[in-house]
Amino acid sequence: MTDFSIVIPNLNQSGFLPWALESLKSQDKAYYELALMDGGSTDGFGQAVKPYLGMVSWMSIGPDNGQAAAIFEGFERTSGDIMAWLNADDYYFPGAFSWVEACFENDPDIDVLYGDAVHVDENGFFISYFPHTRAFDPDSLPSSCYICQPACFVRRRAYESAGGVNPDLCYTMDWDLWCRLAQNGAKFRYLPKLLAAVRYYRGTKTSSCDPIRYREIRRIERMYKKTSLPLSWLGFYLNDLAEKESRQVNDIPTFLVLSALKRFKHAWGGGHHDSLNRMADKNEGRIRIPWYDSRQWKKLHLELEPDNIGYRVEIDGRHEFSVFPDKGRFTIKFSESYELESIQKERTVSIQPLVVGKPWKLLRFFCDT
Image (cartoon, rainbow, N blue to C red; front, side):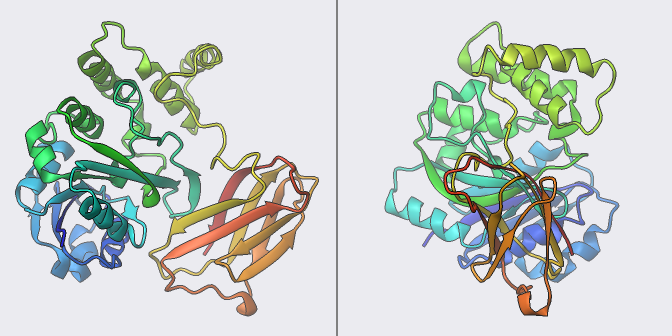
């Protein structure tokens, strides 16, 4: 039977922490050690974690040397064979550990297993599927971080052999670890299953456009791709600018130049995903998101194109609606006859155009609760 070591670093994201802990609690695989590493939060950490103290194997509270150092220490304080860290604002899909355990037990040679993930907003509503995940290719890894960190699990022997998480890094400690594991001969496997949800919202470290982030990205390519002219950081910078809610005046020329250059070069590592969910040009799309909250969905709002056709929408495999967008938008209101189960740990929304074979795209997805 496989034991997991899970580390959750937290600093002033305590409002999200119950979702991460509920996602662990709901796993049907119960054999894990949890190290909870709080860097001195001032947003009610003690109250948020109080109902879950029985799950915690090791807890550290107080100022530390940063997120990467906290993760490194958390792994040192646990002993499970399969290791992963989960940021306090991210969370796992139901059943993720069972899929991961089965893969590691069926193939003892696997050192690193990674799967698919979804992006969700700060309220847990679907934004997109993580767009870059693909089968393992060591040559492209130093210029494209296609492994989503919360959906990645590493065997302890490989982790220790590669030297563990670099505690000096601020933004790329995960990507750096994947590259060192690959360089060290670790065997990677891609599991095409949804394993984790990643929150994407204004205020995250990734969306900060911090120059330190781009310096670390350039370091990755120089060190592991052995190039003196690292360019992949430009793609990440373009992606960050594209996602910014409001750009500064001096951002606009840079954004326009990089967007133009991207039309001629599609190999940059951080390229902006143009559709929300990779469902365009498919006759049916399916959205799956974990849901660890007692809030009921009162209204579901969707924006689609084209807006001159009807769509069939099915929710949780039980509720079916035929809808016709008004200027690309429509709202589904849930009455008592369409009550959604609040205890359900996953929501599934299927969308299909009523005109067979008609290309379409989901533009936005959000709910009232």
